[in-house]
Length: 185
Image 1 (cartoon, rainbow, N blue to C red):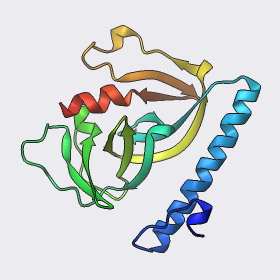
Image 2 (tube, rainbow, N blue to C red; image 1 turned 120 degrees about the vertical axis):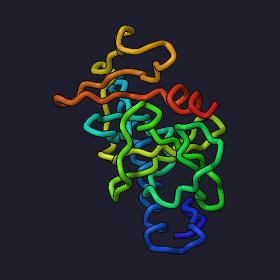
Image 3 (tube, helix red, strand yellow; image 1 turned 180 degrees about the vertical axis):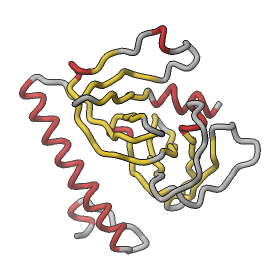
């Protein structure tokens, strides 16, 4: 595997990093094939990374997700907004980490092995979202996604794109622009 195949090897050379890069490339190719098949059928699907905060399940569109890493080595930043836990150094880039529990007004929990940081890209910005755990990558037909009733949220806190109903589960689909970028101001 070299540069000619389109996979950039990490500088660390660790087997875990190399495998992650290979899997990322394979997943991108599979996603492109699935999207092409859906277009042929005329079906619109949402492809989401599902994660948990407490007992609730949330999702963000997979095309915004860069990677998912273990929650470790977060450096606090004095004077940062209350929702920003700190920053991490991800392969030489400083990435702010937003604690979604704090952002959504949920009680804090002790750090544990299940917590993950989902690295997302919103426009030109890369941010990390600290979550309780990542459950799976799912596809939801647009037909089963409903808008949240306006009575359920305030205008200032409406960071929800919709609610997906899938196999007896409700998945809150986040609008990253509203849930993350607004919290950094």
